[in-house]
Amino acid sequence: MARRLSWNGLNRRICKCDRCPRLLEHCQNIAETKRRAYQDDDYWGGPVPNFGDSQAELLIVGLAPGAHGANRTGRMFTGDRSGDWLFHALHNTGFASQPESTSRDDGLVLRNCAITGACHCAPPDNKPTNEELANCHEWFDATFDALPVKVIVALGQIGWRAVIDLARDRGWYEGRLPKFGHGAEFELTDGRRVIGSFHPSQQNTFTKRLTEPMLDAVFERARELLANQ
Image 1 (spheres, rainbow, N blue to C red):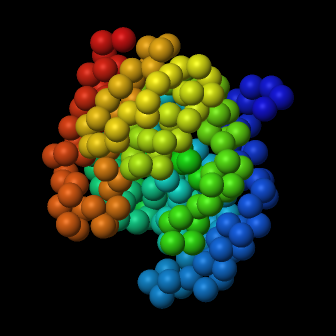
Image 2 (image 1 turned 60 degrees about the vertical axis):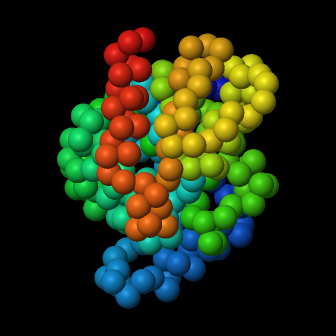
């Protein structure tokens, strides 16, 4: 990145990104075929920008937009069950103004919190390639320049690895890869803290691998860390 981008400038650049033809084609195909329940919706169908407070100290790192969630609504974690779980937990812990998110115009406001993804386009089978993740790394890197991040919550293994890779690139972390787990936590050399969480996917929530109290506990810990910094 030649120069540091503002929060809004970064998000505009993300929306215009065309580096991954496979992902763009997939997003657009979904937007054209649609899901029956959303036949009357005007799908976003492209790269989804970051969402949240432009001065956020808490950054949540997800995998990628959901095909019929964020790829439909144009806002991270908005319009699907994963988002329902996430925003309910953020509301319970004071980071969100309301417990649900249905559209870009629903009035939801995040407080001292922002959401990004390791990948900004919906990938087939929720599996971006390593090259596609690398293409998105510039936006991930720029997100850390645009925000005064102090605590990072990584949702799932890919989000966890994206944070560690960036930390190593910036000299914030050395040594072995910290083991991912729900509630796993470690400190970067510059004082930032990273917390792991199971992703609020249906695979995890339907099987009770992730429960509401478990997810709430992650963000309660994030708030505790912020209060002590």
